Length: 415
Image (cartoon, rainbow, N blue to C red; front, side, top):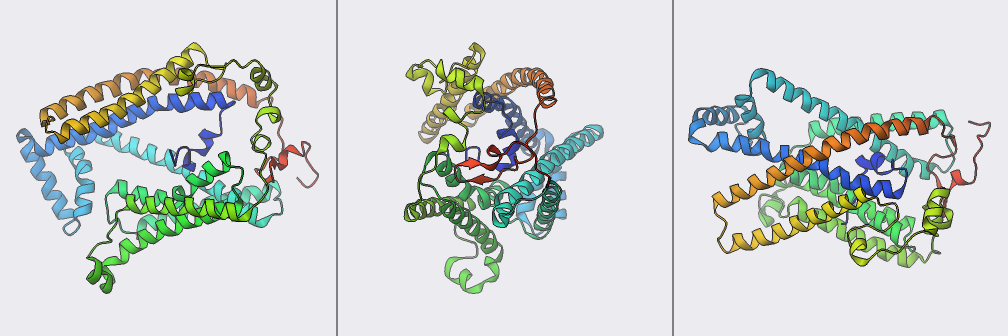
């Protein structure tokens, strides 16, 4: 709940929808893609673990273990991290290993070029631009973005090169993500749903989350070399990354609320800032709002709350809500059964077999559907872009409760 839609590597996708309704539907259809990703992420280690533990593959397992010991003799963490990868190279034929490596490289490039652009743009729009105050010309703006992206890429390269990985990968991702997410959650929630939230409070929350997360990483790396800490608390930093990211978020939330209340600034007109209600830019949206009918509590519970929902949309939301309930109940029930000793290894394997079949079946159907619809929507997007009128003042700057682009529609000579 706290970090929903906060990860800004996805900001382009989050802001691309034509209407709020389209954004809602995209969030649901995205889950079909995630099912295929989850299926792959689970299947690959299952295959590797089978090879490493089944008697029929003992020779291959021995080769993997020997190779890991030789390559990383003094690093148990890297041995564990590389175990699945090295196993795959032993069991896949040469051509398939190359294809897999090519696919991973493509995923790496497509992920990082998006992230570098996203974080570079965020630095310019949310840090550099507000501090500068004076508007940039278009060429200046583009150069600022380019330099910012080079800076992000350089930081990622040297951070990855120099910073040692001292924990499990998921934990590492949790604390590095916490550098942004620990403060971003309360800034987004407070900014959208609380009229009292202030800029100073947002900065305090972001800085707090960043300092605690970065401090945790530095302390964890340096801890074994600080003798008095080792003597007093042990050889390792006492709290894992999940716990530290929770503390970072808790302190960020506390500071955001306290500072916002102490500043006592006038409330912001959120409808005007977000182009909602009477400030909507779309006449079509305004007309639909007038004709809006009331929905039952059951429909509203699963997110169906406007006339824009077609029969297919309602079916999607029923599926998504049912899947969420199914996952939650499964977790609770399986936990209880495991506590009372009912779940044997064979029963766990049966459960995961059923789960993977569901992931694969529903995911494949969804991906085919999204693929066809995606090409149709892509054509619509290009058609719309060919006639849209550009507003050169729309550079993201906000003054009080409105975008500066709303004040001006015609380009100035300085551009």
